[in-house]
Length: 320
Image (cartoon, rainbow, N blue to C red):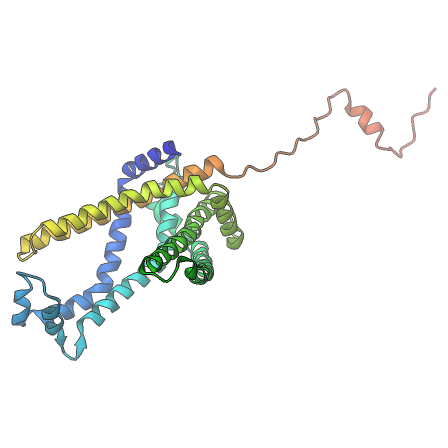
């Protein structure tokens, strides 16, 4: 497993163009969804005297008052932009994953990088979209059932404040653990589809889920090790936000944007490293088809005997 993880990180480094392309793709989607909201915010804050105080020190009450502009709430505009970006990313995800797996799976570099990425994205799009729908339905049903089970078990922790917190913690951990299995199953189902060119998505997702459950420790441990890198990046970013002064000048704003995009770029690299790691785990542990031993081919000396025993209806030659 550790060898698979190490090679997964090496693959993410060697495929830096793939990391950059995926990062740019999602950045463009975010820009397209948030530009209208940012334009409205610029109109609301550019002529406000109160907004100038936000450059020195953030104040939520001042921001809420400043955003009362043109009869529209600024936070509703921002929420609409975030939801729009999320929907665009959701519909783009099957294409991106198809391109990523096509690039990582083409070991022989038969085609160019762009041909592999866009060809794989288009070829697997609808199959990956159906897999995403199956994953979403599974998470809703199983996640809801797990939440209900945890709520029913809540009285076992007692009615004290400590028991309440413990019950909430167990609820979150249990739901996340169960939903993570279905998310990992989605990854392994995509890998199976790319390698086998399968077109039965329900069967492919079931095979992915069975693989995760059969190799629960390996699949979860590999994912946790790689995802922990994203956690460290998040801690570093939050530390930067806490220790640096408020971005009150264009220079500091530019530095903040650069740090944010560097965080997203590295997180994209970790995601690709995880996909490559999962591909290697699948190739190493996937079920092998049963090998049926074929009967040995008859020798040349046996062929006349076999033909004569088949029951030839022609008359035997007469002896002189």
